[in-house]
Length: 148
Image 1: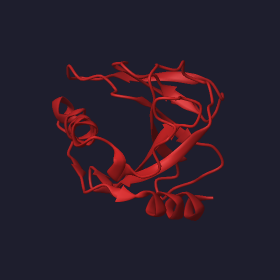
Image 2: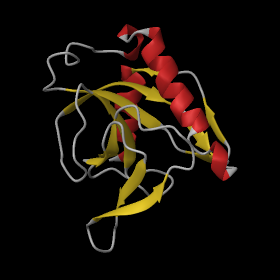
Image 3: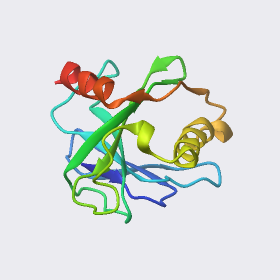
């Protein structure tokens, strides 16, 4: 389920009480989400939220829409001292990206952009985020299974 469209500076999230998409905040820096961002339904992580997913595709998707995606990797992340890993996926119905099966197949610059976004997007809020090395698709699938 998409919460934030590619190119947005607005951080939306699903409100658990109402089931509606709400504005959480506008990002404090000049960065925008490099790809569509959301969560995997029917998953639950250590932070009591569904598993986060960044979906690489050509076009932005409206918040609240769901799409078919294929996990290609996992980005281990620590957000203010707490584990907040992100699944990296491609849209299964996007002809430009659906052929990717593992994160190592992506161009290095694409990975650098994703890493830099997550390292920087909370800096002006004085919040610390650490991004570790990207892990393969097999690790992403293990994380998804563990969260179900």
